[in-house]
Image (cartoon, rainbow over all chains, first blue to last red; front, side, top):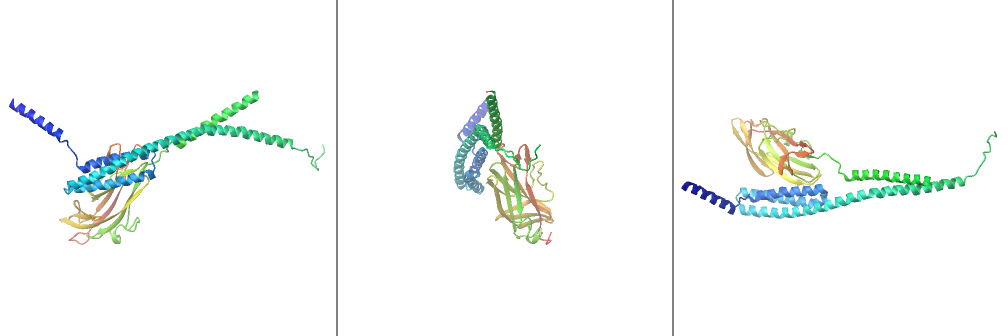
Length: 164
Length: 210
């Protein structure tokens, strides 16, 4: 009975300890997870139609964050945890900025693509109508030209024509 | 009256035919064309050419001889990519990477460099290395190498008499579908991989040249 109570007590204590101190990764690991998430956001923006010019700033910042994560990792290995945390936090700050930039670029690119698609499809009936108008008025002009040409014709006899 | 009706029918037919043609053109113009997505990696010699990979073109490298290469990667994928170039030190018995099965080499990592690349961007960097130390056990040699200013002790691999070392260069790419960095990349339903290797011998401390 006492053993059962002790085991239950230990389970409760361990559960409480885990709830109070949730397991956390090293700062560089958290930053790296966020980095991969941000790369994904940038790729999504790119695939949605964001151009290299629009994304170059974000990619530059991503590489800057990558360097900070690597330096945080190196500092962790040397046991300089406080400096590592600072570097990782700076990387996280940059990555948050890039994520919101990527999201905004993605929305902008999607809107632009939709507008372009709409405009291209809207041009189809307009161009078809223009084709009909060109056919109609072009045909009229051609007929007028033929009529005028026919009316202006004069009968001429070739001087050396043989008489039948 | 009949003639006018016929003319109207002709106009309607022209309109419908033109509409079909221009709608098809609009579809073609707005649909992205499938293109092959790939990466390229390369290693150049000291003078930025596909030659002179070793000082005096001698592939037997003695300690403290600096070997200079330029390594690059080009992203020809559909979007920006996170790429890692892993440099591994191998010998003749460690299997090379396999591009058919997209299996990386099991050789130990010497050093790695990573970067996010824009679409169609080429990333090139100098790769200077030298042997700064050799550990000899019998005729087995392992190396201590300095790469771009960082010294790395490589207890493995070992070679007999310092012969047939090789540096593998493998391209690893972030795959958003699996949220991990993988050897090679996916294009369509296929998996592709890119890797390079450069062989060299190391001068043994006691025997002179290998």
